[in-house]
Amino acid sequence: MPSAELCLSIDLGTGGPKIGVVTLDGKLLAYEHHSVATLFDERGAATQDAEEWWILIRTAAKRLLEQPLVTPGLVRAVVVTGQYASTVPVDEYGAATGPCLTWLDTRGGPYSRRAVGGAVQGFNARKLWRFVRKTGGAPSTAGADPVGQILYLMNEQPELCARTRWFMEPVDFLTMRFCGVASGTHASRLAMWMTDNRRLTRLEYDAELLHAVGIEARQLPPLVPTGSVLGPVTSDVADELGLARDTVVLAGLPDLHAAAYGSGATALYAAHAALSTTSWISCPVAKKKTDIFHSIAAVPGLTNDSYIVINNQETGGKSLEWLQGVLAGTGTTMSFDEMTTLAASSPAGSNGVQFIPWLAGERSPVDDKRARAGFTNLSITTTTADLIRAVMEGVAANSAWLFGYVEKFAGERLTPVRLVGGGAQSTLWCQIFADTLGREVHQVREPMTAQLRGMALMASVALGRRRFEELDSVHIPVQVFTPNTQFADLYRQKVAMLPRLYQRDKKWARRSRTK
Image (tube, rainbow, N blue to C red; front, side, top):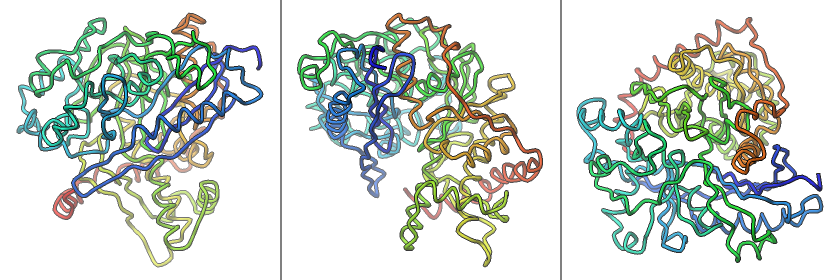
């Protein structure tokens, strides 16, 4: 499509960045995916090298923009989405002063508990009410969010803090690297729970909430409206990548929002589910509200006057990647396609094997960082195919457990559910999701790169090429999977077992594991 307007789209997943060139009507012309390492330690660290992201993104973008089908002069915008609830310490020029503390990093837990902890589900009741009333949520007492991460750095790495001008989300760090402008939005900063989300036009952090945790507004990037044009790319970036000097950079968005755009689920109550490293179920909703008991909230949405459902399950498609690594250790090396093909040889129900997918704890519908995964009902006849299928069914059952609460939260029957993410490349997994949710599932075209497409569609609105209400007319091909009623009772039983297994095992998990 040599004459189409383009955007350079970046999706910084937990596993590493995807970089793509996409037309403004959502057609992916070319992309690359690069892996990055997450470094863990016994204290709860989970960090990534933010400067490595920047190097990978620049070098990949340069290659992509030199491809025959791509005309760099037609690139109108640079857009960034990706992981959130993470913190990059950044100097005044936009360079990282230290590694990114990802959403898995829990070293700030003691400081978060000191700031907001108490007797009501682990929170101080007065502070919890104050946060939920204004924002819809509250900082995690596990420390696995920007409040815990910033407090950890302030208390344990003062030398790094002395070099740091801003504590930024990854997407905001990357947009600053492209254009030199420090910014955040209600959407990109949602996991910090420091903006009054009752009034989305109020572009400032809430002084009362900041005081409650001991963080100052001057440490955080200035807020701008969602969809803002931050400015042109810097001359250095333009020259290195071959972009026009008037190519603009847009404010970043979390991957939750990009997935809604990229799945075509932008209308009120249009549902999508992500089967990525993590997993979630979401839809736009009419107003701000919170279910504190199941960690579900309506947060700043796709526009500056709307809301979207947020929740998170810590391990989605990552569960199958974990099993792939375990099998490799036994000398069995299989690709994703080979694993899912083998799983299809095991019958529905995995010959009785059940997998509990809480490899990194859980957030929704139970908030417990110490919850742990496992297989149950193994036998001497259990096969590798049974184990793989059990993992796929376990992830789907976990989503179905959450799905009931999300539907109740939305107050609407959510159907169909559009499925995105790397795991959604498997037609078997899509069918298992349809059977387990009891809903029609739509596998969107190129589900692994849906967020790249979504950010291009967002850019088309921000640049005035189409109105937000016209996004429904953008055709995104899907493959439809309808629930097989033959397996409805079997999968209902698997879903019903999860809360029972959680109650059975939670005390043991807390006694036997400190991390």
